[in-house]
Image 1 (cartoon, helix red, strand yellow):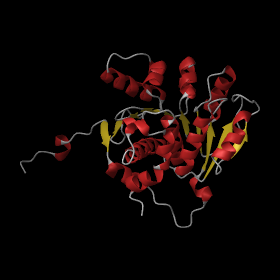
Image 2 (cartoon, one colour):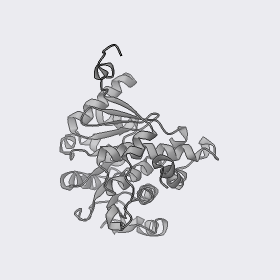
Image 3 (cartoon, one colour):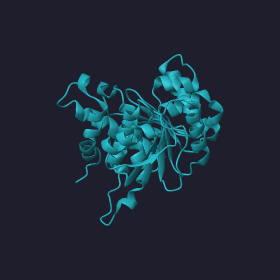
Length: 296
């Protein structure tokens, strides 16, 4: 020991690479005397004519991730699809047949996700605006909800603090504009999270999760098999399930991305990357949880 200060030798960084120890430290064991109410009631606002698969994937992933109850608000065209395809979910039926024009009363829910497969119809955009105004619980926005935000950027200032946005690179570009390099895009992501007080999950290899404080977490799990239609809907459901169960938004985003990637890694043990579909990711979630949280 030559007298150097440990704190000065290892200054804090705004960047963290998320490994298994981080995830295991955040995990909370389920109490012995828990019941379904202990793990919250999640609301998924999703689907439109021809896009009900997105609603199914997000809802089922949310259930698999441990939410006590899940209600899916869907247009009339999707009720039978949901009731048959996701038997464990409850359905809230919209007044419109083809797309969503309204939302249920939000007070019964512990967390809300909006966006998968909803389209960008003007009536649906108004629903997104009203959810932003009315939500008093953690909120996840994905897919078409992000496209609607990109067309109505003044709404960004009204997002509840800690809202989780989960864009892929093209959706992020619509929200913020083009970047000249990956480094510039990362700085734009950090600035966006700080400016609007949101957690932004920028999907891709080493998915980056930026927070309102300016910190960024880079995910260590996942592979190209996750680059498939519906994979993002599954991630939305995973994060929603964690939020409904009581995890704070930052932890839910970090843990959700990690588990989603871990599930993708398990998928390719016995299948090729090319053959994986989004349903496979959900099928592996139970094993991914065992692997990520060391649940016994």
